[in-house]
Length: 242
Image (cartoon, rainbow, N blue to C red; front, side):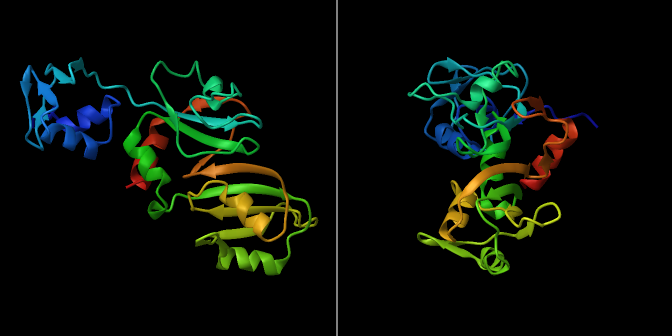
């Protein structure tokens, strides 16, 4: 059986880094895309190798998808550009790839640990959406011991502004002697959610480190260093992000 090497036009446009597949469908239906010099408006159109695609007069070339795992240090902000000239995570991965990549979600300036960067917009969107239940595990160091009562509250749900956020799991870290260190598993994608949960209950977060993200861990990845994901890891992410 001959391998089908055609690709849907909306996927080709998304792979070129223009927009998502859904937005690409809008571009196609409004006549903004030309294939081999002709306007194509039919959704579901497939193109084959050698076809030439233009959007707004610009030739589109599919980017190679790149997946970079960074162990973020403190004092770097999760943004592609900072008008105040602070250090950004992009400086740490600038030699990783010639493709433009973007952080998946955020870690605030003082939070350390795992951060995924990619140019695969479809996957990034799915990984950030809470409905896919991609787990994040954080190691939290607090100014005082966490009570069992507060741990129960965190699992049942803590009200933050207009929403209630519940952890999937929480436990004392290590041997649990100091009770100031906990591991918390959560799938909420809200900004600064772990800090806000503990602050709401009267704790000050001294250190916050993301140890796991969507099944990826920091194993053999020193602070401030990055690595490219393996094929197996990429396939796992694709499956887990549905």
